Image (tube, rainbow, N blue to C red; front, side, top):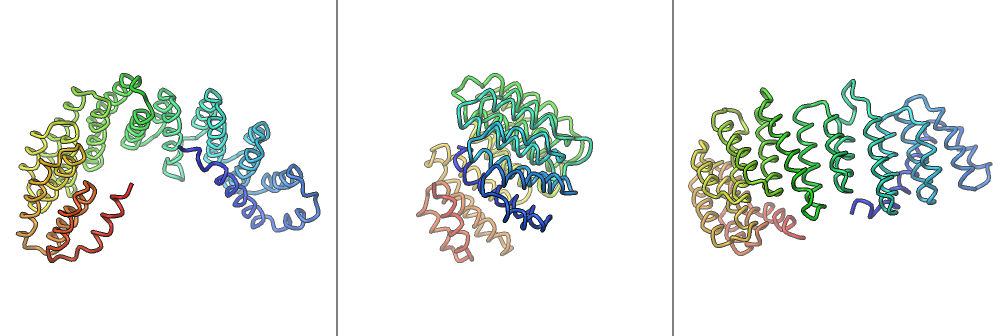
Length: 364
């Protein structure tokens, strides 16, 4: 899936790199007009100009363009030879990602794994990364998608921030589950168990921790870890109900919906009943109804949608009422309940934009 548009991306990157070089070194434009129009000659001129750039990230962008150009010509050896010239670790990793994608596309799975591991190991973590660690998440996903789950977890553990590190592990787990025939359940379950153990010991950051606990539990449910899912969700529920912060009820609503998807409807409804904010409680009802519909239980979803709608129209605050109705409408549209969605849209509130958004979401 992630190699589908590789050639288009490589061509675009090479063009971008050339523009970077021409902007940074105007004299290069004249050079390019007098050399022979042979790929090797052009790349040689570009390489010389790239190596002369002062800022490492500019040099990296240019060299990544050369890597892309070489891969476009199916010259893997030339692409790999450019790696030693990088001074910027993030651009070096991006170039190695290009090489790994190319290798995977051409059936070189082991080599692709090695390139991804090399990309991860070369990133310096002594100071905050200028891309906020996005490069690590990209590498983690690639590794998990090609079956190198151990490598993905190893890369995720290099992320400095506690919550972001756990999120990278959850992303690796989800990607591995999506691309697995079921043989990865044990290793994924172990990684998620460790992620939960780390998450529950994080002090402060209540909103982020609450969200990541829900994400861990959902992944555990997908991995068929019933005991682990129950433990994570129970801990999250207790922690959230005892807390008091702005996003609390929104996360409780997400937790309730996640518990429905895991098969625990009773606990989901208990969470909804314990929510303090009436407006958010109605939104949580709609989220639970949407989760029921997602699990092909439309007969149970419709009554909950009706309850949420009845609560919404009783809400005095117009802004809150409209927000609830829009949320209900979007959940109904995602669930394929278009007649019900049009009924909600016709309730007298400014819903047309929400209906339009909902229709876009519903398309495959």
